Structure formats: structure tokens, C-alpha cells
Image 1 (cartoon, rainbow, N blue to C red):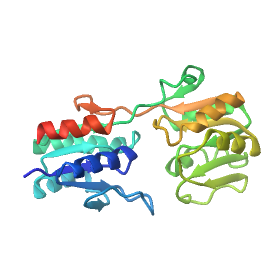
Image 2 (cartoon, rainbow, N blue to C red):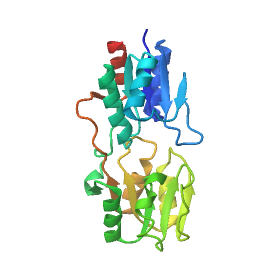
Image 3 (cartoon, one colour):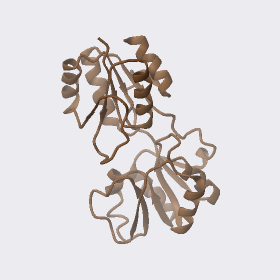
Image 4 (cartoon, rainbow, N blue to C red):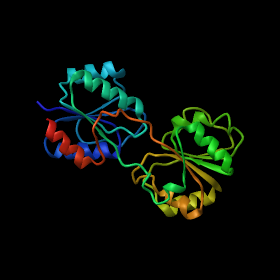
Length: 247
């Protein structure tokens, strides 16, 4: 019997789950559990980690999974590696579903691309002004000590994991965002540089367009490498077709 495991709580994962459900394909979606009120996909859902690649392999075997789609966030590199290792050991086909990044954006050539969050902070220091940090709460520790007394604007979906400096402004919201609203936000808070990561997609792309309109510099953390031997799809439709071809 077919049983597909879809890893991730991304919009692409939810879209894929809906497509498979509509075709009568049995599936389970797995969420990391880091968001308190996630947008849920259709069909059965499990939440939490697997206990590393060995735990994931045991889950695949126990639940007789016949295909795995890694539709996790582009920066969930650890889960991607675990999925590749577990699928290989269990002999289960694996596909990586990854939304296109922002390297094709019209302004991408003018942005500063870096490999990690420390380098992003250093690039922002060279520019000066108030940073607008949109890289997620789990990245903030890279900036706490260096920017303890600097005005910083941070946007988060979930509350910060630790107290933030008094000089920082925390905005709680979840996309999608509008360009006009992003532009107004940047003007209101006197943003001097935008720090983001190459998440891709349309939900949060508006900040990049707004920065371009205002002539603000943008620093982008590039995506971490993924296992090279895993086939990849860039949209849920292609991923659904792959599932049907291997199950």
C-alpha cells in the first residue's frame, strides 16, 4: 500500500498534501512543532522530531512509507540531511520540494549575499543605520552581543526565545505582506538596511520590493547546501507527479 511522508509545514508542503489527498494518495504530513499555531495541511499530521536519522528510518519502516517528500523550509538543512540518510538506509525514494529562491529577483544583483548570519551582521555594520532583521527568532543570538545597544527592528512570527535588548523593537506578524505596508513600516522605523535570508516564495518578498523603492541596501544569507544526490522539484504540481510515478 502507498504511504507518502511529507516533511515540512511550508506552503508548498500544504499544497502538495492537498493535491495528494485529492488523488486519494495516503499520506502523513510531519511538522517540526516550532510554531504554536501552524497552518495545518489536509490529512493526518504528526508533530515533533524523529530522533535523528535513525529515528526517522525506524518511523519509515514502522509506517511502511513508500515515498518521502522533503518540503521543509529552505534553511532546515539538518532535517534535509536526516531525510536523505534515513531514506537511503530504508530504500525509500526521496524528493526535495524547494520553492525557488530570490536570486532571480530584479534587484538581486545589487544585494550583498553572505554565507551566514555573522557575515550578515558584519555587512550591515558596514552600511550603518537601523537594521531590519527578518531572519527568524532562532538566528537572533548571532546579533545580541554586538548589537546590544544598537536600535534594531526585528520581525517574528513567534515570541523571542530569550529577552532582547531594550533598544530593539519587536514586531509580531506573519505574511503575506504588501509592498506598500512594508515601505510604510521601513519609513516609520527609520530602517537603514534589511537583513533577510533566501527563503524564496511570495509570502515575504514584498520587503525586498519595498527596500528597492526606498533605495535601502539588502543583505541576504544564502541557502545552506542540500544533499547533491536527491532529486528536486520546484513546485507542488511536479512533486505530486513524482509521487505518482514512484508509488
